[in-house]
Amino acid sequence: MTKRREINNKLQGETLVRKSLMRRHENIERLKLVPNLNVVKIGGHGVIDFGKEVVIPLMKEIGELSEKHKMLIVTGGGVRVRHILDIGIDLGMPTGVLAELAAKISEQNAEIVTLLLSQWHGSRVKPGDLLDLPTMLHLGLLPVIHGTPPYGLFEHPAEEGLIPPHRTDTGALLMAEVLGAKSCILVKNVDGLYTEDPRVNPKATLIKDITADELIRMDMEDMVMERKILYILRDADNVKEVRIINGHKPGMLERALGGENVGTIIHA
Image (cartoon, rainbow, N blue to C red; front, side, top):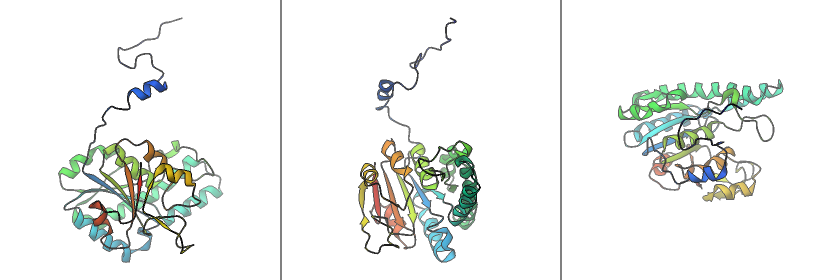
């Protein structure tokens, strides 16, 4: 049998799946590319779809806050994502194709938000250019990116059904993790995470503070954010919490950027 070629290194001959090898790397300090960055995800369904009465005041708040806080603005998709997913599922499209279709909608919203933030130096960022972010921030720009992770046709199959599990909430967390951001804030149209949908059950209780493991065990029927966040947050190295706030209420983002719990905090 021909001898396998090797290059001398610490992983020489490894399968890269051995458990003890994985544990050996747990204590290695990860590089934080932008440690003072706040990743702020603007919901499509929860914010952008409500139009100018909600969007314009929030854009003004974000623009003014960008003068003292470094932010990456991430956009969701909203009602048009639901429309294209409905059509795609009805036609039997695979999950990867559905992910490709959904990404185009959140990208459209990123274009809109970039233009609305232009007077505060709003600048469009493509996923492949994410590592240009430190330079953009040094130049005083306010970067805007769409939130759908670029798995595209390689999107993971859903545990149940066909809807892509990695959508824009998840994308925001993944970007915060790889950039070593200090916070990941999801801006929604409710005050935080409730035990049930408060629009359906007005008696639902607001959860102010909870861990990812506790939420996984609760196995809730519905949530205001994507479930995949819980599993990624649990394994994250840089990001230790995700905040959910109400973008329809002026001042909530400023208070959240200041570290105040004005909605829900989900801890790793």
